[in-house]
Every structure is written in C-alpha cells, then in structure tokens.
Image (cartoon, rainbow, N blue to C red; front, top):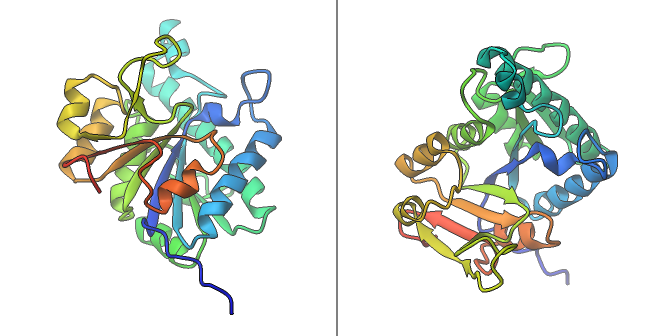
Length: 247
C-alpha cells in the first residue's frame, strides 16, 4: 500500500526570487541551465501539493540605479526594470513547462500578446487548478521594488508565507562571509528584525508584512532541499520573521 505524501505545512506560498538567480557564469543575463535548476526546485514544492506564486526581480538584466546615476528619470528606469521582470518570468515559465508544471505568467504592465494581465482572482484560480503563477511587472508603478511587489501579491493571493530566497541560510548575527563566529538566528519578531537592522526586505515591503501579519522566511535557495524542508514546516532552515517569532 502506497503511503500518501504528507500535506505541506504551507498550502500557498509566494516565492520571491532575485533576478540574479538566473545569472550564468558570466554574472548577468539569463542562463537556461540556471532556469532549469530553479524550475526543478519549484517542481519539488509543487509535487508536495503546495500552490506556488513567484515574484522575480530583474537585477540580472537591468538595475535602475545605474540609469538614475546617469541622469535617467526614475520612472523610466523603474519601468525598464518592470519589463525585464517579464523577460525573466517568461524564461522561468519555459523551464517549468518543459518539466510538466503548468504555468501562467501575469504582468502588472499590460503586454497582452506576451502574458496575462495581473488579475488577483484569476491568479488564485490558476493556483487552485495546480498551476504555478509567475507575477511579473512589479506593482505596475515606479518607486516600488520587487520586494514590495512580492509582499503585496502575497497578501492579495492569500499566501500563508512569503519566502525570500537568498544565498545565505537565513539571517545571521553578523556577515557569515566576514565573521566566522556569526550564527544563524532561527526566529525573529518583526520588531527584533527592525531593531537589529537586518535588512530583511526594503522597508515598504517589510511594513506591509508586519501590518498584515504575513510571516517571512529567509532561506538559502541554493541549498538543495531547503525549500522543500521549509514548505513542510521544518524550522531548522532559514530564519522566520513573524509577530511572535514562531509559526
């Protein structure tokens, strides 16, 4: 008799990926091999039965600050970044579809021949049908980061948790790359995260999560199996930030 797969602790997640997650060896652009590796990690969570929403940044293609420093108007720089997130979303969709994960790309910047417009209830319905949904185009407005877009979308779709994927296994007492005595902090309250100046997310995104009691989990996306472990509810990976510091 086959043992049923245990249900994930988090039924619906919003995964925030940096654009740099798609970097290849050259340090910029979109590497198909990296897209495939990301897709396999998402598939492992999808196979648990979790509903998956994804917000991805654009730092591998464009950093608005570069343009702003050279005199570009911030709305122009930010809109270029929003368009770049759509490119990343399409690359990730292709990688997911090729491993049989049905996927939809929605965008807050209207591109009707490329991706669906972002409609909250449609995004939720896609996830209920087992489709991964990549939410691109930021918030559709300049002056907001993709961190803020991730927090906003997580609340709109009713996510149980916002998972911030990084290259470090959570929040540490100091920079672990510089201080060998640095230790991982497994749990933090929102107030502790603010007081410690840990820069979990930008302030707008963080405040949205705090005011709406949306837990944030910071984990190492590169570490094999950590994402699945976290979605199952195992707090041995990453750092959880919430009102109480607990789930």
